[in-house]
Structures are given as C-alpha cells and as structure tokens.
Length: 203
Image 1 (cartoon, rainbow, N blue to C red):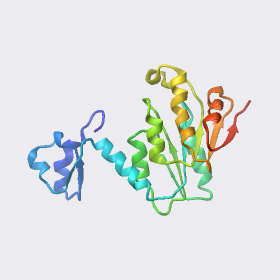
Image 2 (cartoon, rainbow, N blue to C red; image 1 turned 90 degrees about the vertical axis):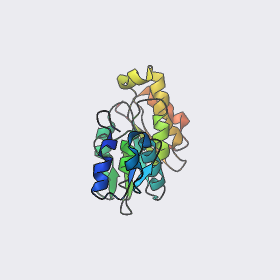
Image 3 (cartoon, rainbow, N blue to C red; image 1 turned 90 degrees about the horizontal axis):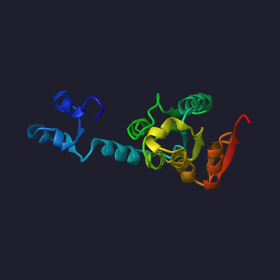
Image 4 (cartoon, helix red, strand yellow; image 1 turned 45 degrees about the horizontal axis):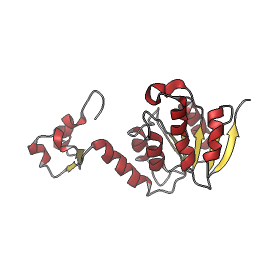
C-alpha cells in the first residue's frame, strides 16, 4: 500500500495476466479473489515484504555497508558505490530507497554475483534504524552527521542521535564504524562501538 494507491485494487488484473503469486491482505479483497490459489494471505503486505527480504538476505554472505545520518546519505552512498565498483560488483540503494519498504526492495536484488552492498538507512520514527540494521546486517557503518532535519519526527537532537547510534551499536567486532569527528554527537558514538572506529572530517 502506498500513500495514494492501494495495490490490492490491481490483484484481480495481475491474476488474470498469469501472476504466479500475489501477497495480499484479505481485508482488501473480495471472497472470489481470495479463493484464487495464487493469493498468499498475510496480515500486512509491508511486514510480509520485510520478512521475505530478511529471509532472502540471510542466504547471502555479501558484506554490506550501512549509511545513516541527517544529511549526506545519498551523496556518500553514490561516492562510495562508484569507488567500490572499480574493484567489486556492488549492490547499492537506488535513489533514496532507505525505508522499511525501500531497503527490502533493494535487498531482494541481491545475487550470487554481488561482492558488496552499500545501503542507506533512513529513519522517520524511533526504532527504524534498529529494524533496518537487523535487516541489512551491515559489517561496516557510516554516520554522516546529526542535524535538525528529523526534528518533526524525533523532537530533540538527542533523540535523533540515539536513533542513528543504533547502527554503530549493531556493528560486529570485525567491522568498522566510520564516523564524522567534526560532529560532536557523532564523535561520541565511538564509545558505543564494538567495531573498530575510523574517523573523518575537515577540522
């Protein structure tokens, strides 16, 4: 379901065209459509997509780099993806597909040919970064900065900081937290890291 269009209105159409399966919430479909053998009934399509992507991600040992921060995520992802493509086959977030919908859709494109993933992790509410890091399972993480851009969701800079720090807390001991040391709030995240810490900055 999107903000403007409910995809359930197209279920009958895609079934007629021979879709192998359709994941759907029964409350949006008529009984005659629900009885079709290709309809997979779920409580919410969003959760079904997330669960499927998490299962699919676990089938691959491809190392991933998670990128979060108030601003600069997409630019950082594009620069890093371009650099890594010189040596590796890279899966990276398209556009700003960095939500609980976008990240699963990106991960579903993983293949045996990929050697590294570069994924943006966005947050619009408390718990989003925890959820997305558990999905993406990044070995390394980058935090660009902490700013006022998410205040309408999180109310205070400290809440934003705590949310973004979830990426750093998740990283495994063999990985790296790459932190903007020009930003005092990001610099403090080093204390939460089990991974190695690499700093960057201008000052």
